[in-house]
Length: 437
Ligand code: NAI
Image: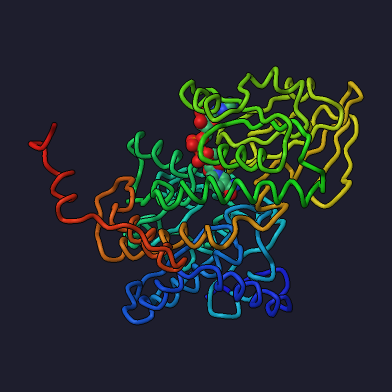
């Protein structure tokens, strides 16, 4: 059996303290863990989890292991691993292949490592693991597959698919990729889109990213947000969270750039300025992308920016800002702080890019606070249980509503908050069509 690989095992003690702190703030997941310990619903399953290797993910994988699963943990981003947490988990029987700052080759080697354990359930954040498995299934051989094979050994595609019961997907971008796979008729096993649970996207994408994105911007730059003009590309769940917190931090102008007229109108009614990036580029001090789309900030936009503009990305992939273009045209580049690069443009202006344009909250900060991941990962744990208990036809699913409500109910309970209950009369009233004026 392949050995775990982490940056430095001597960091394990610090990792255990991090996990302890996260567990104190993840009571819903701990309640699920207690039930899993008794019922062992994941017994016999091998879960390959391709997630940001953070302390919160550590609490999730411990919960999956408590449910009887053998767990392999690999990163869903080359720059987001917390090395101390990876070291601690590797000492607890979790198979870990993760360190911060992986090359592209090492990143795909990690996927090969996960596949060598013959997973029965995949857990993904951004769909790199699932897409790679599908490339193998459809006979695609590119450079990434060559890297996968270096650690997977010989791969028997038929055997791989006969074992996989299903998978889960954590984020918007991953769900979009998997729905595209389904639409093209090429999806090969069922997927639960955890992102589509209310108790995921309404809280994680909005309040989690809203806070942790600013945490990343502030740790990387230590700039004062008050008085700045903040430009946010994308007014989805993530963009809304970033906008609310920008206002709370005292930004002078909060400018939203959107392509969808309904979301743009919502931004207007929420009290923000709305304009195209071409115009926003000229006035912004801090730019944050959250579109899930390519080149929301193009090289043309960057040339229009003020000297000293700060750029960060909160969307899943590092394609939202044209970093490759910036690298190509810059006349000088230097690192001036951890996770902060200065680029000098041919026109003499300087722009500052945080964390190579990768997920700012995970690269320059620690990702979402534990309390939020408590909800997202409760959904992940329950989705794994759902897959273990139900043999689903191949499709992309949302978790059943009862599970979503149960997660919210548990969270309220652990927060000591009681809510109103419908009376029998009210239940009848809202379910009848005869009762009117
Ligand atoms: P969403 O689909 O709700 O919102 C994206 C918005 O961007 C849409 O309103 C869309 O119309 C808009 N958009 C698309 N192209 C655009 C362009 N060129 N210019 C301006 N607006 C554009 O998605 P959501 O849930 O807000 O997620 C956004 C991204 O953030 C995804 O990549 C998602 O995977 C990622 N994400 C990152 C997290 C983190 O921890 N940093 C957490 C959760 C999600």
